[in-house]
Length: 309
Image (cartoon, rainbow, N blue to C red; front, side, top):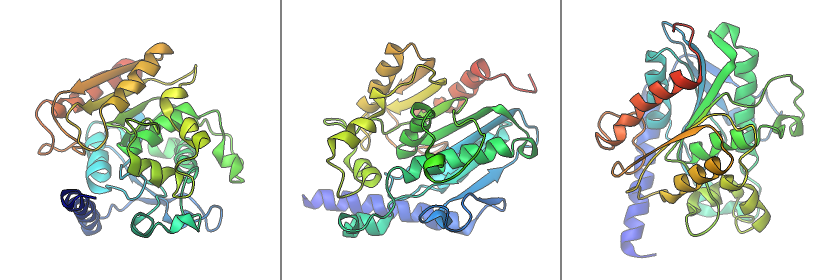
């Protein structure tokens, strides 16, 4: 690796640690633990933070932060997003799903041990959908209006929930339920989409699949979402920027093309400048890329009826 590449990686990890530190200073009060004890490996890591709006519109949004499937940007792509959604009438849930972790990133121990890897992340996503569906009334949410919003690798996770809703990963974990696991809509923001070269985000692929399986053709094919758009795909809202230095912008183009081929309901906003990781910030990104928030609010009103309309 070139020296500049080492500096870049170190700066990226420092940014992630800063986000985690900022989160630790202001934890939300309403915490939900999705796994009870030993139901799944490392299930104690999985929590969800609930944000209730003053004037609910009946729509629930499960927010999945990004972080290359290794860590989570809890603050910038989680808590701040939930606060913004709640201020606009949505009941928001920030999902802290299982990730590989910093240890797996640095020491590659998953060459020998399993660690956290697929399908743990999608199982946590479905568990969150199940919980919100079963507790919809107390959360002021309509059961048929539960959607997901994800950023970067979290965008891959929420799109996976849409693509693989007919596969009950909860049943594989021994969970019996009657919940609808198909999200009503998904919003992948600057998402990871493909696991194939030349556009793959290699860190996310390794984080998701695991060190000893990251070159498995079967897994690469099965987790490249542009190849698995279902006939009943829910409405999709995509955003990214052409100058994204982290996740190649062609990921979103591949998703847009795949959805179009299936005539799946979706919109795609591609901005020239904004880079990556801007979330709902009024500082990061550009004035152009920050328009996505207004576009989302207009779009969601067109696809999901709201109680206060």
